[in-house]
Length: 197
Image 1 (cartoon, rainbow, N blue to C red):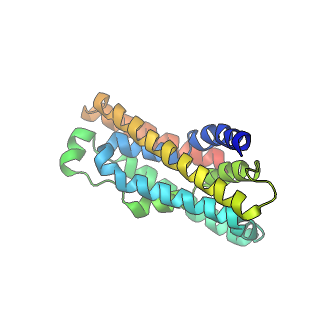
Image 2 (cartoon, rainbow, N blue to C red; image 1 turned 30 degrees about the vertical axis):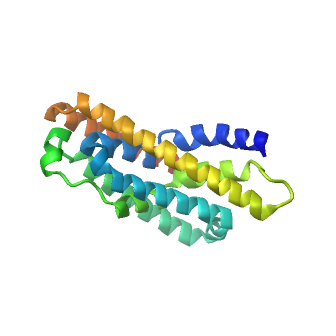
């Protein structure tokens, strides 16, 4: 399992940690609202991404992909939701103001974005199916991959929240903070466009 685990992690961190809707939105929440107010959203992202991992591991994703009408409907809903979240990020006040008045997106917002994130399905699907940790035992192999990839999900998304929050000290000026929020929102929209194309 040692070499297989190293290969899995070497593939998982760059694929799952690269900029995409979940990671960029988590950084944006950290920048706009800080770590303390962003924790609920972060936990939602982690839970939602872990749900995606479970859907891939159990084969449910494969069943969904055989229904083109359902895939199209889910894609449209996901895009609409991510655009809504980009709007919320773009219109969030700078952190110094948000500390007093702003309400960060909730656990449910993070969960829904993670489950609606097309990049998560692609990245996790590639990493999950691209390695075998315990040959000859499908159940133990799946369990080992679930544990390892869940830890990656926690580390990667927590790092993006901290990164975003670190930017907030530079962006506490309302004008700079608003510009940063707009940039994060545009990056979020761009990541969706790239994921869908």
